[in-house]
Length: 165
Ligand SMILES: [Zn+2]
Image (tube, rainbow, N blue to C red; front, side):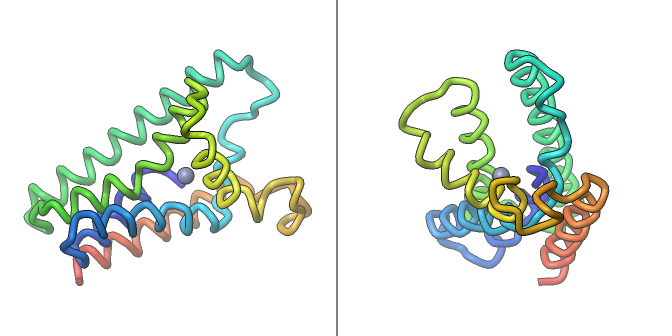
C-alpha cells in the first residue's frame, strides 16, 4: 500500500500505545497485515516494459512522492492540533513505514542482511495476488483503480480513528 496509508495506521497505533518500542513493533506488523489485503499496486508499473535501472529510478520517484504524502499528513495533523507529537506516535509511524523503505533498500543495494525481511514482505504483499498463488482474479491481481479505492478507504478509516479516538 502507499506509505501514506501505512503512516496513518502507524500514527493511530502510536496514539493508542504510549511505549515507543511497542508502538514501533505494532506499526511494523501492521504494515505486513495491511499489505496482505489485495490493493492493486503491483500494477502501478508494468515491469516488462522497463530496464532494471529505469525501474529503480521509478521506484525512487514513487517513494519520494509517497514520502511527501507522509510529510503533508504529519504537517496537517500537527498544525491543526489534531495530534500532539509524542514519541509513541513518531515510532509507531516509523515502524509502519519501515518495511517499505527496507524493501526498497534491499531492492537497490541487495544487502544480504535485509533478505529475510524482503522475503517476508513479499510473502504478505503477494500471497493473495501473485500469479504463483492464483487465489484472486485468476492470478492477475487486483486492478489498480479498485486497489486505489481500497487504499483510500483504509486511509479514511485510519484518519477517522486518529481524529475520533
Ligand atoms: Zn509494503
